[in-house]
Length: 110
Image (cartoon, rainbow, N blue to C red; front, side, top):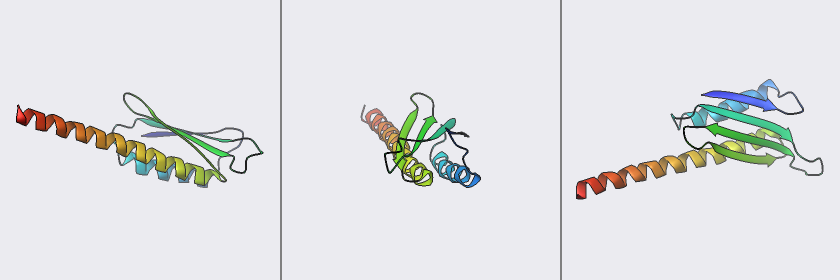
């Protein structure tokens, strides 16, 4: 899976990029259909205490998965977004498994 990191208005440090890669590789291990992850980091309004924003779009066949989180640091925003994305991927995976089981049971009953 390709990981594209964009940081708007600043240069992301190597440690931040490593943190992002580490979190997204974990998600990639849960799905074999992910093509690319687009990560966008930017600062929100200065008046907000939690103004470090992270958006992740996971490109998969069909509908892409998208999450957006904000926190006081980019590392925390990335971690929260990765957790939310893991939940989305797991939910879709569970739904697909349940659908297959329902189809298998229906075929056996017929």
